[in-house]
Amino acid sequence: MSRTEVKQRARVGIARLRHLLAGMLALVTAVTATACTTGDDRPSIVVTTNILGDVTREIVGDEADVTVLMKPNADPHSFGLSAVQAAELEQADLVVYNGLGLEENVLRHVDTARESGVATFAAGEAADPLTFHAADDGGPEGEKGQPDPHFWTDPDRMRKVTGLLADQVIEHVDGVESGTIRANADRYAKQLTGLTAWMEKSFARVPSGKRALVTNHHVFGYLADRFGFEVIGAVIPSGTTLASPSSSDLRSLTEAMKTAGVRTVFADSSQPKRLAEVLRTEMGGGVRVVELYSESLTAKGEGADTYLRMMRANATAMVTGLAGD
Image 1 (cartoon, rainbow, N blue to C red):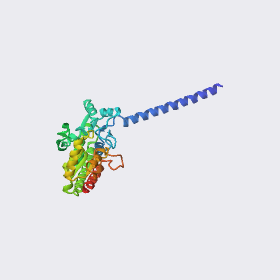
Image 2: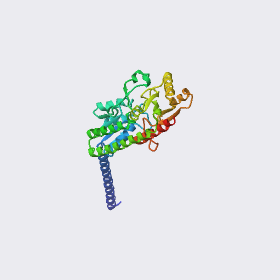
Image 3: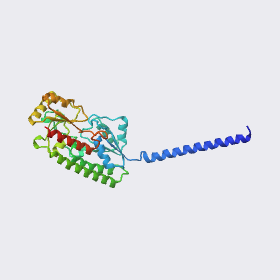
């Protein structure tokens, strides 16, 4: 090989090396830019339940990343966290949770995040909670006098929480535009006001003599209080699906149903209907079981994928079920 050929090959090698280095430099620059725009600088809000997650996203919009821990159709009383999700709690700018004992397997992680300096907002505690009592005060002693966590079944209380949540986001989440947060919260509050008016009009179709509710477990106390219903009992005489009814509980409930002339039981769509089906035997047949979306949103397109759609679907099902009793 001549010296000229050697030099030509050397020039080609150097050129290739330069191209390779230039490409690597461009890649590093792109990765760095991406990290700066989508990495840790982006404010983060972590929400435990999917109902509160939907409301939080309505308020926050594009101002921050909102991570919802509870999957669609899950039971808030029993769902737990992965190690990654627990870490997300501790790295958030704000943690939004229901509280009042609802997320029974998650609250310890919320406590840990709070102890590490993360701001937390307990929506249920801010919603002027009602006190829960087991049916006829005959339930487990620990259930008496406990705050009811299911505040969202009253849209007026959810509207109150909307304003308070906006305050928390503005105060604790750096980088959000307060004017945008306020505007989002005000817009959503108007939708909630419209929801209340629509529910009042819908429930007006239920005669006074048929405004008695029996549910899978105690979950609609706030709705009953707001719209003039009476909760006469639950298959599970508790505020949590993790409890179990005794034979005396079922006997007391069926007697109350017969006295009130109630033949419809509303069961949570995220729970098996086995316990409610027992009432068919206890009541001698003729008991209808109507599913409601009481504690979890569904996946998109399944009928209750937002809080507003869930509440409208429930009200419609309740009116239809009670009017037929």
